[in-house]
Length: 79
Image: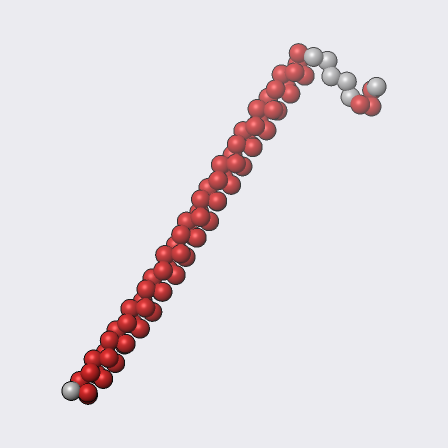
């Protein structure tokens, strides 16, 4: 009877340890995936911001060209 209890205890400890190790690895993989998704979101935000800045620059250049056509512009060296 004591031998049976010892085997059951050992079996239970092995199963518990195995499940604990699996759970930790699973949790680490989930965290890694979550962090990687954050990197992808940051990259997408960075691309969008760069695209917006380029559009703003083009709009600013068009405005400058239009203003230079409408108004006389003096260079700093002419003053």
